[in-house]
Amino acid sequence: MKKTVSFLVSGRGSNFHAVAQAIIKGNIPAKVGIVISDKPGVKALDIARELSIPAFFVNPKDYSTRQEHEKAMAELLKKYHTDLVVTAGYMRLLTPYFVNEFKNRIINIHPALLPSFPGTHAQRQALEYGVKISGCTTHFIDEGTDSGPIIMQKAVPVYDDDTEDTLSARILKEEHQILIESVKLFCQGKLNVKGRKVYIVR
Image 1 (cartoon, rainbow, N blue to C red):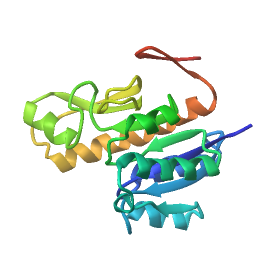
Image 2: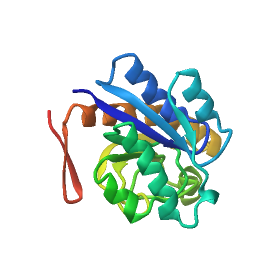
Image 3: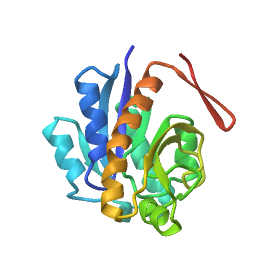
Image 4: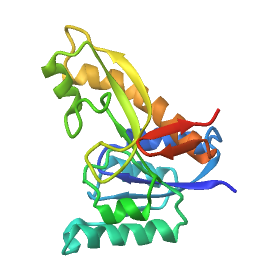
């Protein structure tokens, strides 16, 4: 039986769009569930509606605590029988409650080679540090910031004349590829998590 993949978003939805299209085209053996945003009117919600994917804005300001907000999201995700949650540009740190509700079933994409440059503005951090190689990482979310078990990584060269925008654009192309592949492997039952390590079954 195909797994259902849902998405948490906060912005333009580039990675969400790439994965959703891969599912729709049959390149990932799964079904698209829902899209939930913590911000109204973002492009990701427009893309979801264009693809006829149920899309919801769940306003954090409507809830007294982060956990109450996440309970509302979790209820929606479970209503649509979500097996995997993909955080595609979702900018809020998830609480231990949500992480445990979907233990080893939340995949995030980060625009750096973790554990280097976690958190926001990873591309800017990389440029300011002067690294020669950057890239992107898919990982399962745990209770820390970009600290969960790593699934896949892809290296990208950093050029002397790079700006945050040019480096981000080059990394984004690779983000789409490894996120699609990571979701595919999950849906095929080929990811085994043991402690800090993710083993890919070939």
